[in-house]
Image (cartoon, rainbow, N blue to C red; front, side, top):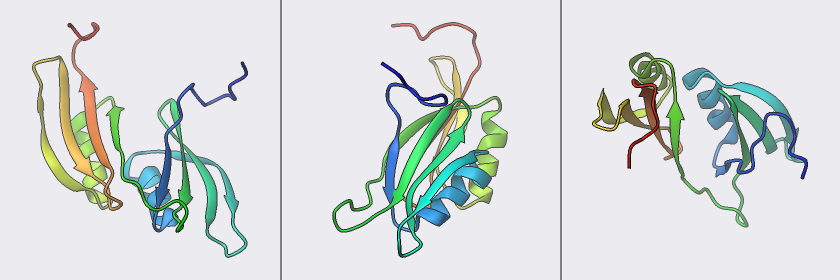
Length: 131
């Protein structure tokens, strides 16, 4: 099985209204890098690929056939507090303050302008999650 570089076995794919704004949030709010884009004849995004850390997210402009579908993501970052502030400064709404969790993560929640929930998490221990 061949998986293209930058992708994993499971790759998130988001259908959103105003995909252009979603891409801006991924790039400016979460530090992503746009790597590929194709447009529909009407100029809207048919497919866009954005790398956030070591993950590629794909997105398209929603349509009647594929309406907007909010999702939830668990995002590992080096600094949860700084990453949360960046997301909030670029349009996210606070879902949960960043705090130390009993399972070894420093974590907070933010909802992006498209209704997606991002659990912004910094692993503060270098060990696997305990059962």
